[in-house]
Image (tube, rainbow, N blue to C red):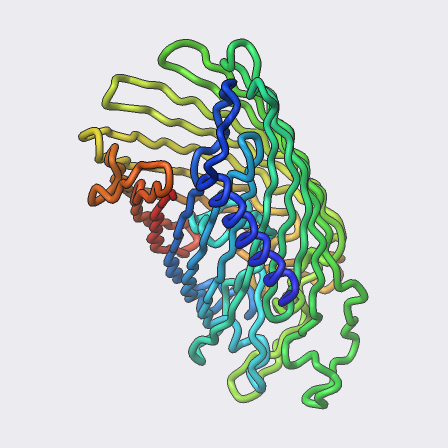
Length: 452
């Protein structure tokens, strides 16, 4: 991973120097002018703070502390290599503190993480690279909290045709944390037509993950703590994910635009979380120093097919008010079905200042393999007590503010041939997320954009 990080840094420095040399060159350009896809280097500094609480920790079998804090700084830079080409590189770090990690092994702490649900509670900054979510799982006990770090990055290259109606690109990404390593590759294509009033997008990605098989403490036979009679070790330690996305957008009139999106995602390998406990209804629970010893770990099928579909409609009510609406239906072959409704209303208070209230509602029907703690039977083939796969409703509402003066914030705009530094915009938003199973979260996100 160090080699990959060094390579990304070298690519960034080389591209910046190349772009700056072109900008400072005194060579006379041809008389024919071609507008650049991106005029200047753009730099975004991102940060999010996510604080969660709940009482259905999956690590302790569906009952326990779900407190989690995640701080995510990230940087995204887009570099115009030429008039037609752009290189975008992002890198971020998730600094997570979770009560659940202390309960993976109550006798010897071994922090690690995992996450799986269709409902995203708004902590999008930590997913800047687009990687499969691998931050600390919810759930745990009362013995404090353990911190761990996830590093992630991505690089995307795109090239646009001379007439600006066709774009293609490739990308690569990585993610690394204790117990989990992921790498991904992708390709994209975008075509506009009908005087750029219509657009088609195709996107394909593949991710390949390696997982360290860390079990709850009572199942670590080699440590000699407890006899785990009948416990079956996992024989798979990888997870592969393949996704394809198709979207079509259309400008219907001067005020309305619609976008349709369909995805197909296939996953295979270890799709359960190897340190989440299961307690059976038909077996007694053994206790040792106030810690409940589980009967088994979470076990789920080795493949999963997801097929969400979404519609987005933007309507310009006036020069001041914009209405953004979004609907998404999600289904998979595990029995999970969900509907998401989202509305955002940007209000342009002045040429420099916009505020946007937002609201989102999500309803989900549980996977066929879910049951609360101590409700599964030992005769079942697959089982989970992770409430991310349960039936629940959730709501998220918040407010955002964007400052984007025409000449940049603080008038930091020096637009000449040699230097074009500008503090373009600053965005801040806060969201409160709540779920009917008792989980709630507070999310703060910041984005500062510069160009030079």
